[in-house]
Image 1 (cartoon, one colour):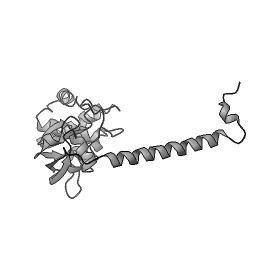
Image 2 (cartoon, rainbow, N blue to C red; image 1 turned 135 degrees about the horizontal axis):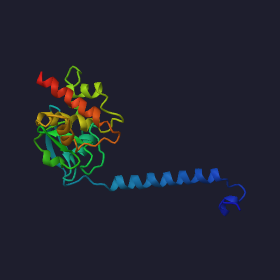
Image 3 (tube, one colour; image 1 turned 45 degrees about the horizontal axis):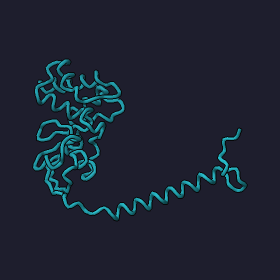
Image 4 (cartoon, rainbow, N blue to C red; image 1 turned 90 degrees about the horizontal axis):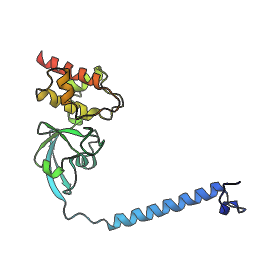
Length: 202
């Protein structure tokens, strides 16, 4: 029994031709709808201008009250090193330093960060291009696999040491538990944190 729809059995209408035609129509409809939405989208009257010091530079940006910090960093400032993972504050991929404290930027509204200093992974290397010791330690210990969570892991690892929560491997694991690695590089991440901790001790 043929599974070809009756309309496609007519002479002159091939399956390939039908699909190509459907794609063109769908694309045209999508473009039309998109254009209509773009014309209908007015500038938000609720937008606010805020000032952040991001990676050492003052940045002025217009954001809506509902804009999260990670959206402002990625979409407005183009700092795409900060990743959006779960977007619910559970995976830690979006971790940045806000006035020296690690935060999940997906749960932080940009307007709440007004006047604050934000450090993202793009701001860790020094102006000469030398990597931050934690970036170097991650590379030397192969503390990343797919790498998607790595920016958040590195920033959280820096804070973990600065907070004094890197006494031993168990404590490092506890205070890095808010950052999830789907690839399972936990052992190497702990080794990287220990390497930087020990180097700082001299």
